[in-house]
Length: 347
Image (cartoon, rainbow, N blue to C red):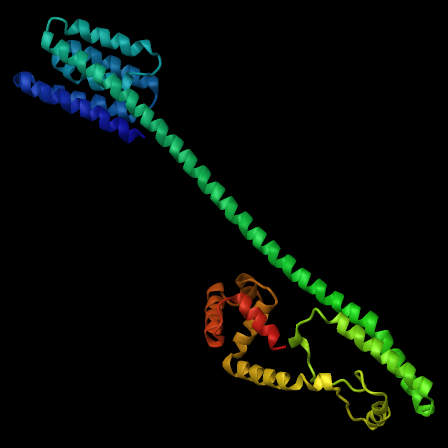
């Protein structure tokens, strides 16, 4: 801010110096020039209004000593104009007019340049106020931007947590449904199978067994209807699960199960080719991705952000981003969503 006043004051100083050189260069002495420069420098250095008023009064006194100082008075008037007490600038102005009243040329120069100095001071003060206002608004904007960024990050983290919590909640719900709706019916079916071993000739018990297994399988379909087809996994087997079969096939199936072998219905056998193809795809994925890349793929499927993955695996965020780019390129996928879907398809 002081730089603007410095520029204006010394502009007025050089105008006065140039006018003096043009009109009366012979009367200019080094003492006048040196004293004027010193007093101007002191007025620009000090910010205290009383000190500035004292220096201005001192300048008026030296003007009475040598009229050549009057050529530099507009710069002094610029510095004192608008300060407190307000009457001081006008007192100095009228004092210099009385001193130069007999010299019309100097009087006209002083009056016109003092008027110019007052306008220049008003304009500069307005510019300073605008700059202060701009800096204040700029600081406010930066603070708002920073707060907005923090709120956005907090919202994203909260959304990630809510999505993950919703996924876990849905998994637990499905697991409880399967346990409540299917577990008891299958337990009842097992008890009926034990009874059937003792009285295999009775048709009534066989009919009851078939109805129980039918209800169990219907409940299984209803409970896991919302799960993806890819969730079916035959690696654990399903011994004794009799899908809807004809009455004549139940007894041979029970005898086979009694020997420790496994029975699969036509519905399950129809899914075997796709599962075998999926196993091949999983194997090829394991061949494509390194162990670290598979770990990162798993974390992405769990819904973790880059920052969270980096903390879990003790890596930097930049390294995690590089790994993700490599995984996307290897699997020919576009984004994290496709990576998550791809992972669950391999289960």
